[in-house]
Amino acid sequence: MLTPVPTSRLGPALVQGKDGAIYAIGGQAFAGIGPGWQYLNTVEAYNPGTNTWETITPTPTAHSQHAAVSGQDGRIFAISGYLFRTGSMEAFHLFSTFLFLLYYLRYLYKVCIKIYKYLHSFFNYTTYLLCLLW
Image 1 (cartoon, rainbow, N blue to C red):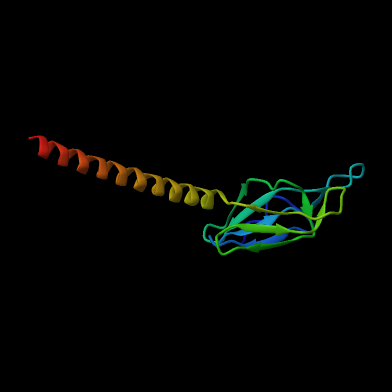
Image 2: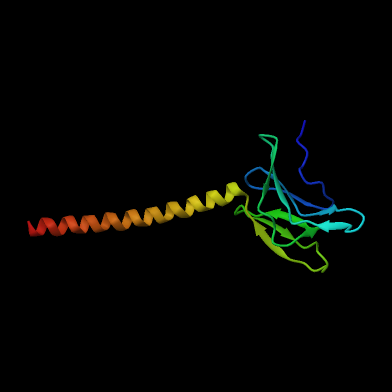
């Protein structure tokens, strides 16, 4: 049996990311007779392997009735749709926690390699000078 999505909503965008998770982005939720329908900026990721949902970083703007696509670089784009009280469009991207960690580790790896190369050349040069002076 599949775990139900934590946030009931109408009109979310659904997309599968490169990490295999299925993302439910935005939509509308009924808040009651007075307030009516609320636009959501909620983003939830479903992991099919563990049958669990994770609430991740929300989108900058609440959207409903929009589209979402997964880019080749791992970013997920939520495009167009209706915004809260404006009816205009916007495009943005979001990261799952896992993808953000991978990008950060990749950046950290590149920095470490540069430091290693610098120190390696420095010590080789220093050893060379010491040999000449000896």
